[in-house]
Structure formats: C-alpha cells, structure tokens
Amino acid sequence: MAPAPDPDRRIASLDVVPADTTYLVTLRNGDDDPREAVLVRTDDGVSGWLNYCRHLLDVRLDKGSGAPMRDGELVCANHGAYFEADTGYCTFGPCEGATLESVDVSVVDGDVYLTDDDYAFVETGPIDDGNDGPSPTSNVEF
Image (cartoon, rainbow, N blue to C red):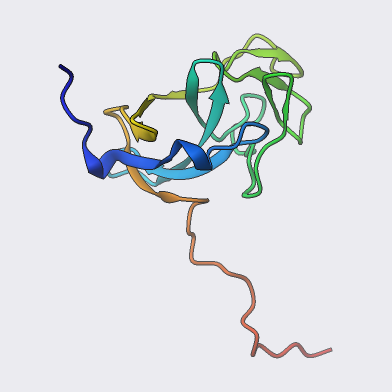
C-alpha cells in the first residue's frame, strides 16, 4: 500500500481545477523567488506546468483569471502558442517544438498534491508581490 500523501503538499481539491481553463498556484523552489504554476485537467487527471510561455519566459500563460484551453491544449493569449495539456509540447506558434517546464502533481482521493521535490507549495493564486495598486485614499494631482 502506498504511503498517505503529505498534507502540507496538498494544493487543492480536484473539484476546483476547471476543465476549460487553468488553476493558478504559487510555488517556491528552495530559497529562490516564488514561481507560478498552472494545473490543467487532462484525460488522465491533472498536469502541472510552470506558468511561463516558452516563447518569452517572462510572459505568463495564466494572468490570474485562467489561461484559455482549446481542444485539450493550453493557449498563450500573448503569442497564440498551443501546448498539449498532458505533455506541455508546443504544437503551434512561435515556440513550436518547445515544451513547458513541468511540475509533478498527483491526484489522491479527490485532492491534487504537489509531488515534485524541487518545489514547495506556497498558496493558490498568483505571486503576492505586495503591489495591490494605488490605495483608495491616494491623491492624484493634475
């Protein structure tokens, strides 16, 4: 019998990972800065990918509201690149032939767990950079 998954590595319930878009999470690689990743539904469960297009690595696939999915492929809204949800392989666009950087996840008893030893789960959603924009009391002078 397989050991029980580590509850600290639980990301979310499988029910919250949508079938038609992505689910955004924040991870940390050792002591490095946080990195964003997306969870994507596949025929076999869920795949995890770092949230950066292979065309320009500073461009996010999911900007916080879910990346588009079409016919089982993740779409970069900036470049129009298509990536297979289960392999991360780019089938169309400026980075055709490249592959998204994977993050190992697994589904156990209806929950998604981070199984990639290179990363630690931080939180659901985008990286919290502390910049929420101007405060409601800020003054603008013209």
